[in-house]
Length: 458
Picture: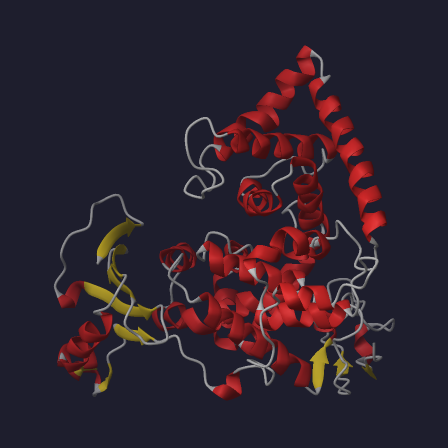
């Protein structure tokens, strides 16, 4: 067992009697309910977190259950005592996608079955479906990620991919030369705006990973070069903190500077869940997330809505998942998103799944914005990634079965091509009304008409 302490106040943590305790929560991180966290919060918003890495949390839970003080508050007409809550990582079969467990992990044999003689990927939709449900064998990532990240087209041949690599290598070297040919004034401005931040970030990015650990590791310089070159080639995006966290796993798997750069370009520009906050697409995604929460987690939505717009934006801390889950889980979540199976916005269903499993405490205690952030931060690296993935796939299935969806969610399924409505069920799209400009995003008519239409099959 280990412990950590966090606080939203300036005073240090101290022991509190039960009457001064705001909440005590048990978050299990394994299906057997033996490992996880005990989170104790005082009324002054001081948190003590006890981590159970092996066993024992189940025994502690039994003690707390037998402790009547936490089971019932006699002063409130025997109403259940809200201070004590156990969050168990469990899903019932009806909460999961009906195809859960049907598809196995994509291994080398399956990968080769989908690649014909000249190197083209045959039936990429079925391959992506396997990745979505079963994941990808880690040893295949260096070969499969360039396809998932739009570096190589699925229908490209071996020869065509070699031409792509050569052309992109030359293009990458030209970007590098552009950066290195800056005059003194340009270099000074670039260092202040970009390079100084990149240099600080890369030296603390994934240093426990075997590919980046150790002093004077040349891979750290490669990581830095890619980020600097990306900022030069994409001046509107530049560099924002967190990009190094996204690039590091890609570089560690691809292990080639130019190839990793172009995979990173695909990750940043064509994989929606890591869109920069500077992108116009961000507001659209946030609106999708709001509508999904309203439809699937309405209590949580209304709580955030009461807190104001800033509270809703806190959910963006969950949208890259690298800092919320151990790497093995985070990469599986990434691959499920990159598979673009049935929606380009699976990351939003992941976010709703996290809220569904771990968000009850926010509502029960009526947490304000800063403590919502602290609540989810305290769960980082202790959430069950497999459970969240299965829940998200179940939520996507539930969404597909809804007879009528608001026009505000119509675009959630319009980019991924074949597959979203391939079950034969085509939902009715209904105008939600109250559009800022008075124009429905799905219907060409003004919102006052509230016209219903069926979504065309894809």
